[in-house]
Structure formats: C-alpha cells, structure tokens
Length: 324
Image (cartoon, rainbow, N blue to C red; front, top):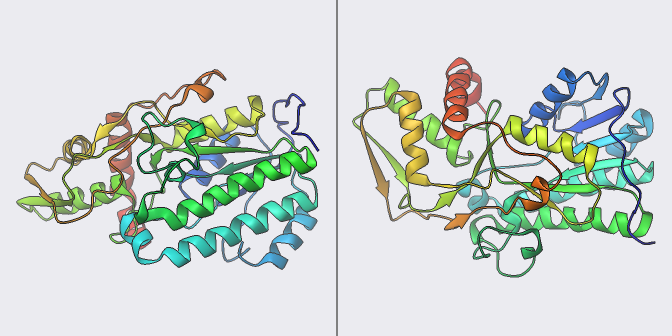
C-alpha cells in the first residue's frame, strides 16, 4: 500500500491518548502540556504497572485500553559512560520496547502515533546542520551506536507501517533535551544534567574547581523539554509524512560555554578544568530544523533561562533526582 496521503486533523480533546514513558523527561512534559490544554483522556502506566519489554502484557494493555493516539516516549537512555559500558542493554531493551508498542498499536490499528527518537541516529561526521536525509549516510558515533541503531529501527518500523497499512504515524528526532525530571545520575546522565549536578555539588561543598570530561570544544544544541512537548503536539496536529522530523533550536554552543552557563546559574565561582584524556564524543551535532519550522513551530525557551529553571528544579528535588 502506498504511504498515507490523508490530511491529519487536530487532536480531539476527548481522545484517549496513551503516553508511553509518562514519568520520564519527555513523557512527563508532554503529559503536562496535554493536561493544561484540556485533554481529558490521558492514559499512563508506570514500569511497575506495565513492563514494556513484556510483549504479551503490552498487547493485553492495548486490547483493553484501545488508545486512539499513542506517544512513544519510553526508552532506556543515558550519557556517554552508560552507553559505552552497557551497549547490549541499550540496544536490546529499546528494541523490545519499540517493537512491542508499535506492534500492539498496529494490531488494534491506532489511528495516530508519534515515535520519539534521538539526534544520535545521524552519522558522526554528518554535514552541519544535520538534515533529515543524512540518515544512514555514514558511520555512527561509537559511544552511542547501539542506542542509535535501536532508534533507527524504530523510524524504519514507523515508515514500514505507513507503507504497508497507510496509517499516518510519524517520527520526531529531538536534539539534546534538558529540564525538570531529567536524569541527574553521576554515572548515566547526559551532558547538561551531569554538569548541573557537578557544579551544584561543587558549590555546596565549596570546592576550588570542577573537572569536566574532554576538551570543552564540542558543540551541542540544547532544547528545553517544554519546547519539545510543544513541538510534539504541534506535529500531531499538523504534520503527516514518512520522514523523521528534526526538533531543535537551530543554535548550538560549545560544551565550555554551556559549562559556564551552568556555573553562573548555580553560583559556582571556582575554576573549571578539562580532562583531555577523556572522550569528547561527537564533535558537533546541530540539527537542520527547516522541516519543523515550515509547519509553523518555533522554540520559546532561551538556553540561559532554561538552565536556571532546571537548576532551581534540581535544588528542590535533588534528593530524589540523585537517587535515580
């Protein structure tokens, strides 16, 4: 069957919407936005209530709940250390989650689905800013290739459903995200929450310096999770196409610049040092967001403001955040 050609309609405020991963960074932001916009049929399950790697349980859940819209935001995520140390976990668990949810959604012919991936799907040395058509044109960054392969499989799964069954399912690929409910673990966090934890601990302990991995020269694009949630709802309301859509700000900063913003936000006044024997990761990762911009969406949270808000959230929740 050819790819779906129908024009999607705005989401019905009364529709039953299942947000997979509704307690995570992205899922919780999407849930908050849907609630504030008056959507009354939200459905969420914690991991203890529904293990998404349990295929039979996932199929039973979909058969029982019959969601009309699915947002697949559930995933096992982590930074360079976690991805490098546990590649099997990141490949296997994410592949299981995606396959189970997508197959169960297809089994009941869910009309509308949004699959969320990551900008790490693109080649390590892709031309900057990275266009959607850069997918599968070169080698991946070795430190997170297992996670990237799982997400690429999810994109192709969505495209296959569109081709074979004509359902208007879509995929969105966010840049580096941050905000409330992020993972601030010392061993598995991404770059910004890791920096926030490090600088806040240094401030509280009156440390003379903070030492970060790498050279500080790689550049990263950062998107506040509230902007990501806004983009997701916008895409569900306005976009129908087979290719994954990049979601970002279209602007990037060096890790050193981001570290200084974090130091300023936390009030840390000591020295920043760089352990150049540690890996930098991908040298630059800036997304071309022209497809998303063409639908009429743009980000609203400035990076310095978003970092300050995230630092405030971490301070208010650091005991529970550090325990993750």
